[in-house]
Amino acid sequence: MPTVEAAQIVARQKAVLDALSQVQGVIISNDTMVHSEGILGLISLDEERGREVLQRSLEIRDEMERRISRRALVIATGPEVAGGQIKDTNTPYLMRALTEAGYEVTRGSVIEDRQSSIAHAFRIAVEEAYGLIVTTGGVGAEGKDQTVEALLEMAPKASTPYVLKFRKGQGRHWKAGVRLGVGRWGQTLIVCLPGPHDEVKLLWPVLQEGLRVNQAPSELAGLLADTLRRKFLSYTANSTHHQDHRNSESNHGPD
Image (tube, rainbow, N blue to C red; front, side):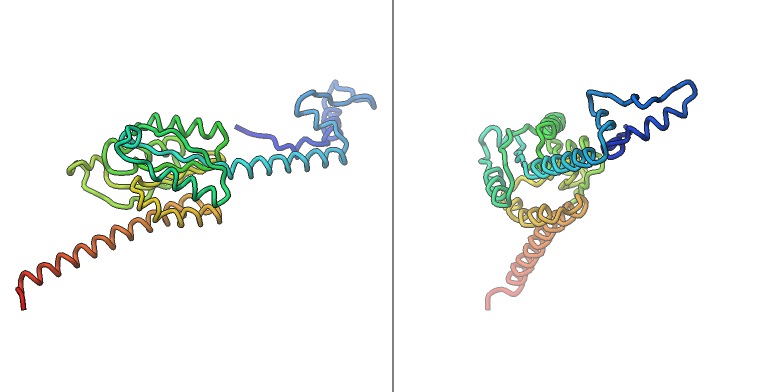
């Protein structure tokens, strides 16, 4: 929808009246003026007063955007967390870390692994003027993992890189793999992290730096995925090394 910036109408009464005077049948006198009790009242301000009002409105807007950007909501997902089978160590960890990074942090309710429920929580958070939403859990390859799908529902241009890929339908792998997600919906940045606490701790420094320098969602998502991917590659390499070592011992026997 087209929008009109305040700068386009402030102190523009003379220009409006000059344009109207060119319309056949319209008579403009010295007493003619533009009057409005709404935002269009800015048209009739003189230039000096108009500049003052415009500057003040820009300062208020910038301050509101700054405050919104520093309001964070942390959301955990999953029935195991909701039911108490798994202790939620991610939320207190992230709340503490974000607070130390200068955010005003709120603990969100634990959300069930359902796309519609997670997307609804995102909508409410945006309406409540949170500039940052961080979720943990629900990014895996099982059918119940639907956090990334909820992110894409709200922010179709979100970046959702794969960390691991699987063969769909193999075991519990209903989807093609594990993905992380970072997207922006209006003023709100949404970051979808995995559920394991060690992975959240591993990714926090990357997220913290990304937030500090205001990285683009695609760049931040890529760095988060690369960091987690390296962990799995290292784990795989170590497992292979240990297996080769055991095979070597078995083949050679004791000295």
